[in-house]
Length: 353
Image 1 (spheres, helix red, strand yellow):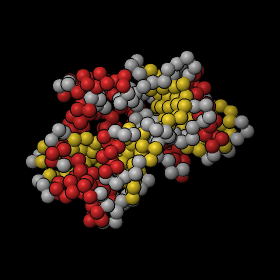
Image 2: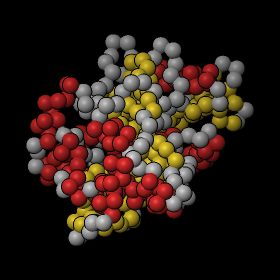
Image 3: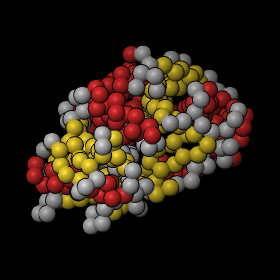
């Protein structure tokens, strides 16, 4: 499906099932220094794990890509229908050679949403067109350079947090890094406990499996254990010189053991040894506990700018777990037995893309 882009070229809707198209987009993402969430491999992994179809809009001129908007078609009975750029990502807005092309891509996305009955289009980063709702006070990102050696990395951590890391280093904790089924099982065991304790549904284990398969050379799992019992674990990605600890958590015993502190410090060391230069601590809700944890580690919060178009007469979907409307549900979810939470959680969380 092609749509005119004035005299500058065309916009093509693609469903990412053509290897040549996928390769062309990957090249463009690298050239534009796009995020992990702009990559077709990310979109396709989300689709494979959740059933929400991947697609995107490509702007081209004279056979060359000039813009790319990745989209996940989220269709949920609980949370409504939305075109999300990019599903389960914290980034993934428009990539383009110039803002005019970017705004045209956004306009076409809203036209598709209106024609196909989607309630909204969500942009996580990138240029936000005039007339779209703009959010820049809800989330912050945290990123800084990695140090040149282990001791310097430890000294780069502010004093109070560094003291906790030193205590963890002197304890009987063990660190394992891998990508095998054993690593995934330990990670999911810890992660599912962590999100249940926060009152949110856990993502399908299949999502983590497909992500590891989609990024075989740029993802792994680091787990901190004590006497064989996993206490904290994080699934990380490596992209454009940065490590992204993306899905991580700890058990109730992790705090007293300082397992989370050791986990992130060891990941910093591991990432540097893999040739990474930066530590991308991901996004956190402004003012939240994780927000302050990252600040205490010496990271400076950077506001993230998101945008949203809502179809006339429709309501924007609300998937923010910190929203007041979810307070009672969160309180109840925290009380669920873990096996029940793990059985019900993926059915809900798959639609929170």
